[in-house]
Amino acid sequence: MRLSVDGASVGFDAGNGHVHDLRVAGARGEIAPLHRAHWVGQGGLPPDLPPVEERLEGDFLCAPFGAHGQAGVPPHGWPANSAWHVTEAAGGHLSARLDRLAQGARVEKRLRLVPGQPALYQTHGVSGGQGRLSVAHHPMFRLSPGDRVRLSPKRLFLTPPSPLEPGRNWLCCPARSEDPAHFPGLRGPVDLSRYPEETGHEDFAVAVEGAGRRFGWTALLRLQAGDLILILKDAAVLPLTMLWWSNGGRDRAPWSGRHLGVLGVEDGCAAPGGLSLTAEGLPEGLDLAPGRTHRLRHAILAAPLPAGWSDVTNVEPVAQGLRVTADGGQDLVLPFDSGFFDG
Image 1 (tube, helix red, strand yellow):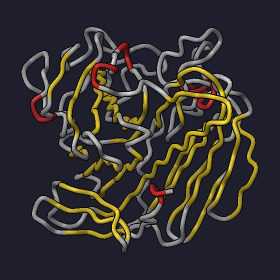
Image 2 (image 1 turned 180 degrees about the vertical axis):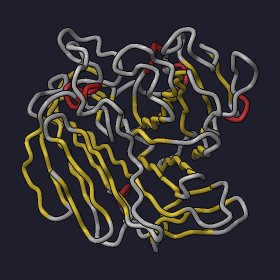
Image 3 (image 1 turned 90 degrees about the vertical axis):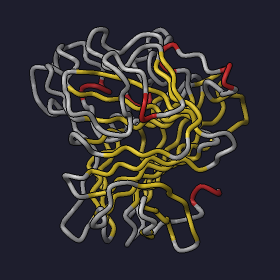
Image 4 (image 1 turned 180 degrees about the horizontal axis):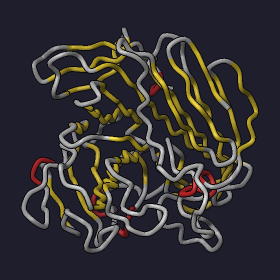
């Protein structure tokens, strides 16, 4: 299923809830920022591969996020592994409902494209249920060595107690730092704000949003591709930005050491990788209850990178749209629904 408007289009797989193949018109041609694993659509995959990995691409909602801890629930939960029922699809709008319950909660998805805007808007409603449910978006992007990764002000960066792939990590685990440019690494400080030159590693780090912030952002400056990718979130609901570097560090099939140059930017509310964040004053999931609905708002934008830009210092909604500021003080204003995160 595909949504299309003037200047943008995106695919939706109702079989597993994955949003994929976002395409945005640019002055030098289309920008397609979302990653698709090299094995998607190929035969010969391991028979026990969960659907979320079998068709690993684009973005999907994880609920629960990461290790499920529930008997019979696949990794990243049913929203990323099972069917959705599309209730409305017209032009740039799509609404769908997860056929299963997530920890007793009903999950609804709304996608929206607006003519002339380089943005994909996503809203998830999580209603009812019981207990605490960890959640996260899981968009993946292909980056090149030296590409820049810039984040809204964070108060802390952490790694989990154990690496994703022991012996194939370049970040120390566990470790913490307030400076992403000097994070503890096995061979000295690592700059998390640049995609690494080296390959053969798999790493994961958690960035905690600055205290009191409602609007969070990640800017990917893909210098070789010549474009700028922005990932926006409601930081009051999704206080974590979890970064996953998948860069040739998994040798088992279907990864086979070939899953290179990928960065996951996973905005969520969770306790990832065994980390306990209650000491930091953070919720570790959504508190579910009958009659209660949580709204998760998230957006992805893509635009040509202005000439001479090598850094981004701020991103903020303004009356005219979304203002992006470079390190030299130059501004770029993109068409955007500036009230999206207010609803």
